[in-house]
Every structure is written in structure tokens, then in C-alpha cells.
Image 1 (cartoon, rainbow, N blue to C red):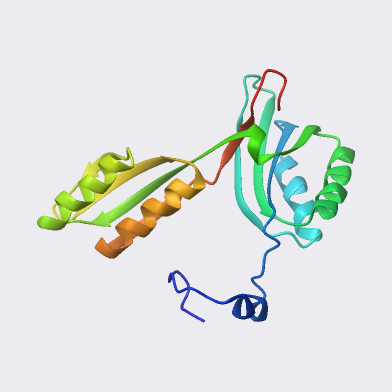
Image 2: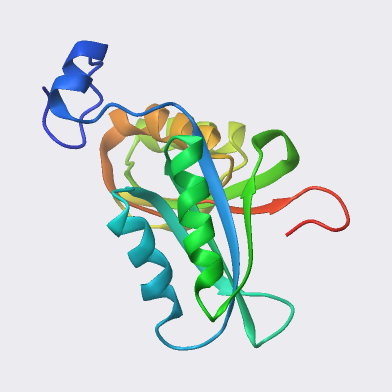
Length: 185
């Protein structure tokens, strides 16, 4: 198996042997909670005790200052998610929980990429940024910092294209999501 951070393609057998096999069912769980100390720890602790690996976690305020939205993306079987959500409902500071369906959800991620770019490479990097509607937010002699917003797939595709130029550093927020329609969480 490759070193961490490499993009080597692995077979299904290699993934299973390494313990990295996923069910393929991506869950985006949106949780409205009271904005109080310790709530995030209790919520994520329930997932950890059940053996879930949280892929991304984003927390932020809502239109009401006393309420925060926790958006968690993870991989898991449907019945296991149901067990966790039942336990989450029992937490005193949890107001509302929703396992968002992908076709009924708008999800976006923000990422910053510091890319090695001098000379001819700079023009190519800027072209790729243009194609992905990425914003160049900082420029130095030997590097540029690009800001990309979009679906997880878009951010992954951008990363794959700029990696050969020399990816110096990367920071990703994880997905935030909201249900489509009027009365969604």
C-alpha cells in the first residue's frame, strides 16, 4: 500500500485487508443543537463509541444565535445511523437531527490550496483555477494560494489537477449541507 497522501489506486482486496473498506453509503447528518459548551463533544462522542469514523465535521451558527448546526459526513450502514440518531435525540441539548438524502441536499466545501507556481507553471495553475472558478487569494514569488468552493467531487478534481505542480499545503473545511425546499433542516 502507498504512503499516506499518495494517490495510488488500490484493489478491493487491498482495501479490505487494510481495514479501509467502506460501505459506499455516504451519510450527511445535520444536527441542530443549543449553542452551549460541551455539546459538540457529547455529539461526536456518540459516533466514536459506535465505531464511526467522521469524515468531515463542520459547526457554525444558524440564524438564531442560541442554536448551532453541526454537519457530519460519514460512511456507514443505514441501521447503525438510526441507532446513533435515536441516542442523539436523548441528549438534552440536541434540538433536531436529519440524515440528509443526497438528491434532496445542497452540499458545499471550501478549500485553500498553496501551490508551487513559478515561471511557466504559474500560467498553467492560473488556467486551472479559471476553469474551476477558483479564486487566487495570495501570490508570492514561488507560490499561489487558491480558494475553491464546490462539491466534494469538484474540490477532489481540482486537487488531482494541481498536485503535479507541487501541492505545498492544503486546508479543507469539510462539507456543509442544507436540505432543499422550504421546511428542511
